Image (cartoon, rainbow, N blue to C red; front, side, top):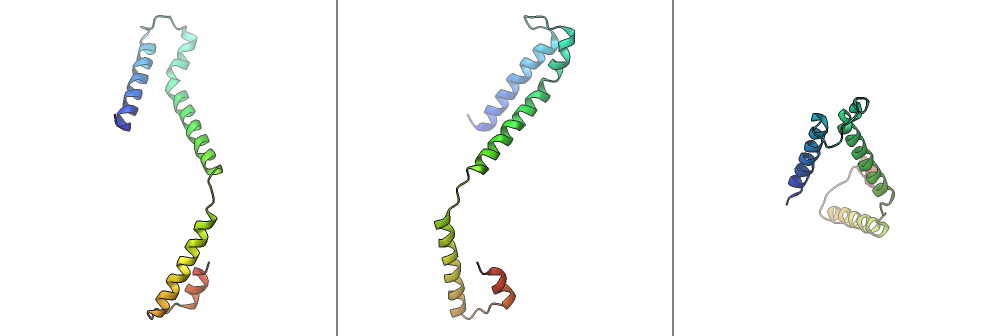
Length: 102
């Protein structure tokens, strides 16, 4: 099952359960003073989902690895590329060299 169908199935089940709660056909009678919370269940769900997404993003940004070896390799490739272009007759402006030097 593709991811879209999984999300749509979950959303459909959620909406069905919420509709049952709103219609009053649930096995347990919900008091009138609690019906406001039943109406706000989608808002609560979206807020919880947003906080979960935000915490996952923050965790992954915090644990992002620096690749020092790859950075050095990239700098060497840039330097080799510049040297190769100079050999082929490409001329760099002074501003370009100052801004592009790593």
